[in-house]
Length: 293
Image 1 (cartoon, helix red, strand yellow):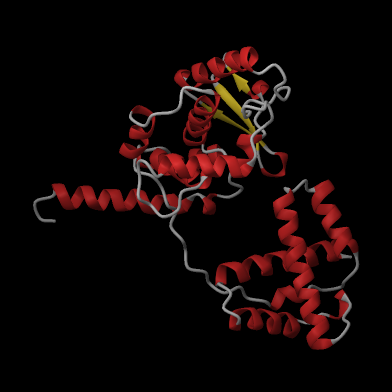
Image 2: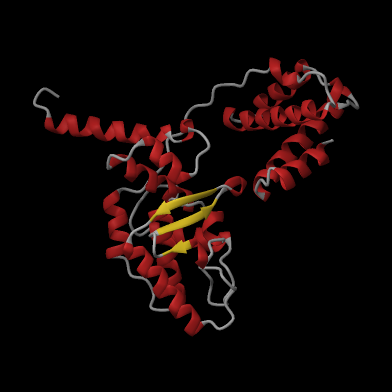
């Protein structure tokens, strides 16, 4: 039944390969635990006590509440699928309470530091330098995910409406308004690509000097190398630039629901974490400006 569920996630829900792998790993680990502790068990025979036993073992092994909650989510989705397919009469997950996970605040780069990145840091005068600068500008100006960036097509950039259409999780499309300056950089890049790279991957916006689309490790290296020149934050990744995009919008007064739409979040709860940084900024302003602070 696990393979049928994975196929459902892949072909009907159209989840990403990374997400599908996570579900598969979680379910296989659960089945292996059941076999080791309780012998062969069919999905219909799993009880809440068995699930709690597995979760307790994970906790004793040092796993964080956040990771345990992900595994609970995988099991919930699996048994929801089995209920819908008529394979079980009741889900053992109804009696499972997820542990409270400590909220991790998003790490972001300060606005002044991002300004320095594009105005003061030097980029090589070659194809890699041109590509690196544009990929950083796209990540910061749109908040798109790494997978969305490397799969971005030229046709998704619309000059007339000044938007970029991004295909996100679950093949959901969202529209991100962008500046004329970014559009100009994109078109300049495309023109140079046609002149310098005759065999570039058709339709893909960002490509390496070989003409092939970028791969995740390349983007990670670029982000780490250039952010290291303007900030001392420990984590430097493409996702940090997504956090930076959202935080800077919130700090400048953007509505929470608008930021949610730009990020492509399914619920407002995922976006609300960015309000903390805005509140901290207000506290700092109050502390510096109010005579009684």
